[in-house]
Image (tube, rainbow, N blue to C red):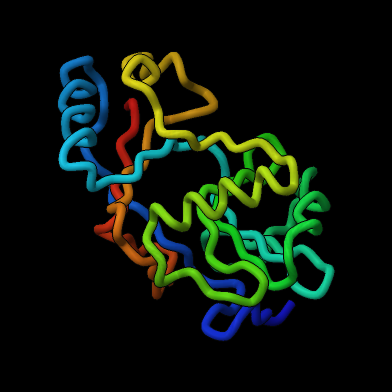
Length: 189
C-alpha cells in the first residue's frame, strides 16, 4: 500500500516520536526521586508505558489505517479498529496495540486539522476526549505514587512510564532508530 495523506503535513506511514531510554526504576528510592521530579515544577506529562506494539491509527475516507513504529503498515488485525470509524474523517492517533486492541495516548490530527505543533499536554487531552466520544477505554492516566511503587506488580501490562516535556511539539522522526530527547522512557527493569 502506498502512502496515505491524513492531513497536509502528515503522511502515513511515518516514523513516530520515540523516547530516550532513561534510568530504570528498580528501587523505591528511584520511584521517590521520580515522583519528586514530576511534581515540581510540573514540566512533564507522565503516562504508563504499555507493553504493546507501538502503532499509529488514522481514519481517512471511512477507512482505518494502522502502521507500526517502523514506518510500515500493520499486517495483523486490530480488534477494536472499527470503533475508530466514529471519529471525524482525517483523524490520526499515536498509541499501542496490546492484546489485539489499539489504545491511543496522543492525538496528532482531528477532522483534517494537524495538532503536531500543539503541546504534549494538549495532544494527550485531545486523545482522552476522543476516546470518551467513541466510548473506548483510556488507560494512560497519570500514575499515582502507589502505582509507581508497585513497579513489577504492574507487569505484564505496563512496563514502566514515559515522561514527555509538557510543552513539546510532536516531531516526525527520520528513521525507526531515532529518538526524541523530549520523551523519556523509564522501565521497571
